[in-house]
Image (cartoon, rainbow over all chains, first blue to last red; front, side, top):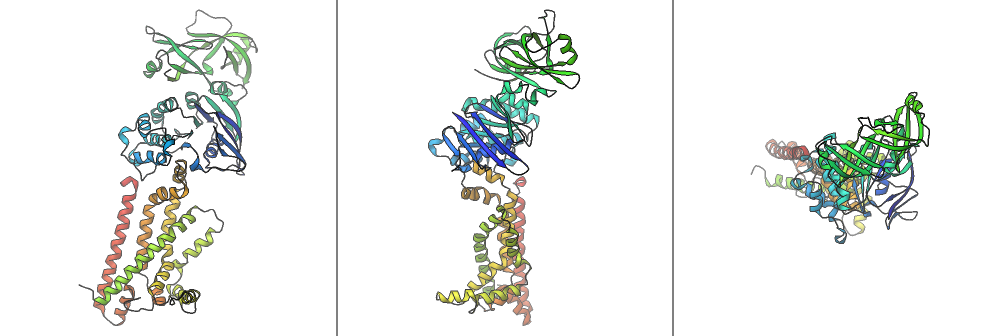
Length: 365
Length: 227
C-alpha cells in the first residue's frame, strides 16, 4: 500500500514536476526551502491545484489520471493549512463536527471524543475561534481534519504560524497522532528539526523537482545533497533505551552500531528516556571528532568505531566527512588541517568521539 | 395618528415596494455577486460597469428607458400583452421591475465586496472537509458574509424607499396604486400642504435613520473581535 503521485504544474515562472511514491503509513515529510513547491505539491494531492497531466493513487483509490479528476470534497483527506483557518461563525465543537457530519456513517472511524481528548480540547468545546490562542486554534484545525477519518493527513507547515512556545505545545500531539490513530501523514516543512523529530520517510524538493527521497536518517547524512554541506548539518539515529545509571544521571541507548550514553538535559528527558522507550537522538556534525585510536583517557563518553566513506572540502579550512557507523550513514565536520594530520582517506577505519547528544523525540514501545 | 389615510397608503406602498424589491434582488444578486467575486473572466469589468450604471445615471434617464421597454410599444410591454397581461408601465409590477434595476448596485456591491473579503481559504477548507460547492456556499460563504447581507438588505431597502425619478417616470403617480411616499411629499409641497409634507418627511427620516442604526450596530457586533 502506498501513495503514488505524478504531477506537472506549469505556471510560467514556476514549474512543479514530480513523480514519487510514499509509504502509506507513518509520517512522510515534504522538505525544501520556501518556493520549492512543497505547498503546491500538497494542494495537488488534495485536488485544490489542478495538474495536467497528473496521476494520483492513494492505496486502492484512484484520485486522478488522464481521464478523471476526483473533486477535493470527494477525496478522503484531512488538510491542515499553515494558518488555522477555523470557521469564525462556528464554535469549536461545530468546527470539529463540520467535516465529520459530511462523511458517510460507515466511514467514520474516529470519534469526536477521541480527537478532542487526543488534542486536549475538552475545555474549549464551546468557545469560538477568536477566543482561542494561535496554538489552540491550530489544535482545533488538526482535530477537525482528523475527525473526518481521512485516508491520509496533509499538513502544510502547521507550526509555521506559531511561536516557539506554541510549537512545543503542539509537537507532542503530533507524535501521538500517528501512533494512536494510525493515519498516514504527509507533513510539509522547511524545518530540519521538525522533520527529524516526526518523519520516517522524506522527499526533498528543490525548485519544483524532487532532489531526494528516502529514510529520514539516510537523507540527512547523504553527502551528495546540499544538506550535509551546510555549516550546521545534523544527523539522527534511532535507538532503544536499554539501561540507566541513576548515580551519574545517564541513560544508555542501544542502536545498530553500539550504545550511546545520554545525559538528561532538561526535566522532560527523564520521562523521555524511560527504559524501553524508542528514541531519536540528534547529533551535530561539528560535535563529531575523529581519532585513530580508542583513547581511554578522554572525557568523552561516546566513542565508536566507524569507517570513512567520503571527504569533501568546505571552503578553505573545513571538511565534511561521511562515515558509516555500523550500517548507519553519519556526518562529521572537522578542520582541513586535522583531516590532513590524520591522513584520512575513504575506506579508512577510525574512531569517532561525539561530544553532545540531544534527545529529539521518544515514544513508548 | 399623525398621517392621514392617503399618506399612510403611500407609505405602505413604499414599504411594500422596497420589501419586494430587496427580496427579489437578494435572490438574483447573491449568485451574481458570488460570481463577480470569484470569476477570473476577462470581461468581468464590462459587466461590473453595466451593473453600476444605475449609480450614475440620472433617475429620469433610467425611468425613460424603462418606460420605453415596459410600455405598450416596448419589448416587455408587447411580451406581457402577448401572454394576455397588461403593459407593465403604470402598474405596481412595473415599479418593482424599475426599482430592481435602480437598486441593483446597492445590493450587489456590498455582497460582492463581502464575498471578495472572504478569500478562497474558508471555501478550500470546507472543500477539504467534504463540502460540495453549493454546500460550502451555503454553510460557509453566506454565514461569513452575513454583514454584507445586512448592508445589502438595508441599503437596497432604503434606496428603494427614497426613489423618486424612476417611479415618477414609470409609475405615473396613481394614488393607492403607484403613488409612493417620496412622491406624496412632492405633491404636498406643490400644493403648499407643508404640515403634511413635514409629517411624511419626518416619518421617512426616522425610518431611514433607524435602519442605518441597525446596520452600524450589527456590523460592530458581527466583527468577531466584539462578539
